[in-house]
Length: 173
View (tube, helix red, strand yellow):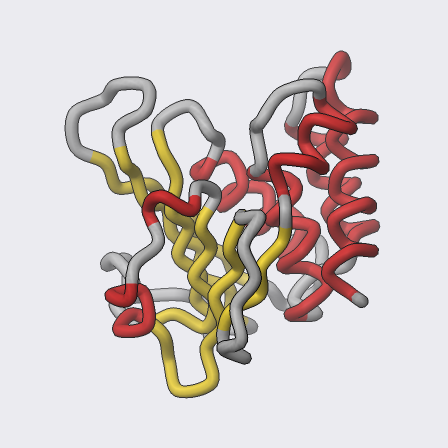
């Protein structure tokens, strides 16, 4: 089973990204998905977490993920050294930031710049999803595009697909 933790703030779309990843993975044969959020007081800007579990057999464990293959931060202010404690042995952190890191476990991407360029606002959920696709191989950018087309409102589909592709290209370098 592959397990992904999404860290964001209310309104940034962490749960939407968790669901989109699940929708994209579910396009494969023999695929099982579980995506769900975890948050405290429901307000814009409050820290939230979302989880995606992907497997080729039914998923019985519906609890929060303690150790992830990928931990994704839509907002770098939520990132701290504690993030390494939630990674599996070969886990990776995808971090939306302008900073650079020498740690091979951290994949830094300037998602805010890509979001501004393609979406006109700093919503980085689909950008980090595109980057995850490039570094993990769990789903393709084409599968994400199908998931976006099936779930997002028409007026934002093309922009988000373009943002996913741009992030994919940047993370694949």
